[in-house]
Length: 331
Figure 1 (cartoon, rainbow, N blue to C red):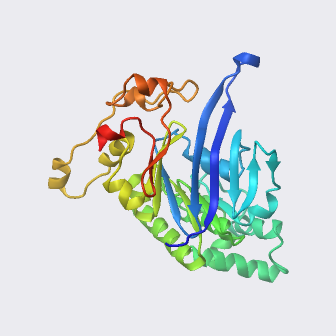
Figure 2: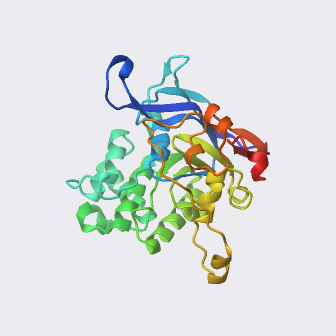
Figure 3: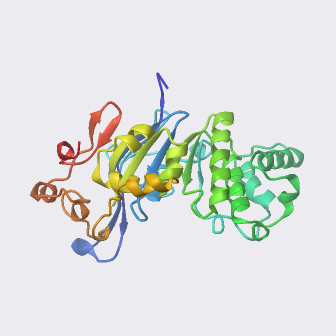
C-alpha cells in the first residue's frame, strides 16, 4: 500500500464524561484520554482492548456522535473539530461519507419500523431518491448486497435473527454510499458461525465499494483476520499500534502480549506448549485511573518510573508504535 492517503486523523482526542460532583469537586470518567492515530483510505484499522477501555467511545467521538472534550479530528483533509482553534464543522454533509454499524442488532433497529423504512430513512433524509420507485429499488438492491431479499423489506426487526438484523444494520450504513464506516463490535453479539459470514461480508463489501473501516472488537482473532493494522487500547489510552502481522508476531507492550497469549489455538499440542500470560488484579476505574502508566497496577515490569511518568507512544520500528518505559526489558 504505497503512497497511501490518510482519510481520517485524530490527534490528542479526549472524551471525558461528567460523573457527579460540583465545581472543583466535579468528577469525570476519562473514557478516552489523549489518543492519536490515522487511517489510510481503503484500509481497515482494528481497535482492540477489554470491555470499558474506550474503544467504542473513540469510534463514536470520531463521528461526533459524542462531542469531543478536546483534540482534533480531520477527515479527508478537512478539519471537523479542533478545540484549540475553536473549529466545529457542520456534520450533516459528512454524515453521508461517515457511517457506523452498531454493536447490538437488537437495540439499534426501531421495532416499530419495517426493514424497508429503516434502510430507506437515510435515503429520505439525504434526498437520494427522486421517486418512490427509485427508493424501493435502492432499498432492495441494498438488502440483496448484504444477503437478504426483497421479501424482507416489509417485515419488522423482531421477525429476524441476530445475524439478519446485523445485516440490516450494515445495509442501513451503506444506504448513503459512505467512504468510511466505524464497525462497533459488529459481530460480538452473534453466534460464532454467523460471525465468520459477517466478517467475510465486510471484506467483500470493502473490495467492491472501496470502503475504509475502523473495526472495533475485543476478540483479537477476529480483528487479526480483517485488519491491515491494529491498535491496542487500555483504560482510555492507546498502548500499541502496528501492522497486523507485526503486532501478533512481535508485540512490544506487556498488555498486548497478554491479549495475544489468550487467543485460542486449534491444535491441542501447540496450545499446551504455549504459555498463557495471566494478568494480576482488576482493571482500575476510569474515574480514578492510576498515576503515570495506567497499566502499571497489573504489569510485572512496573517500578517507580511507571508511577511518576506517563509513557509516550513512540515509534520503535517503522510503523510500530508502543507506550512503555521498559521496552528494552521486553525485547
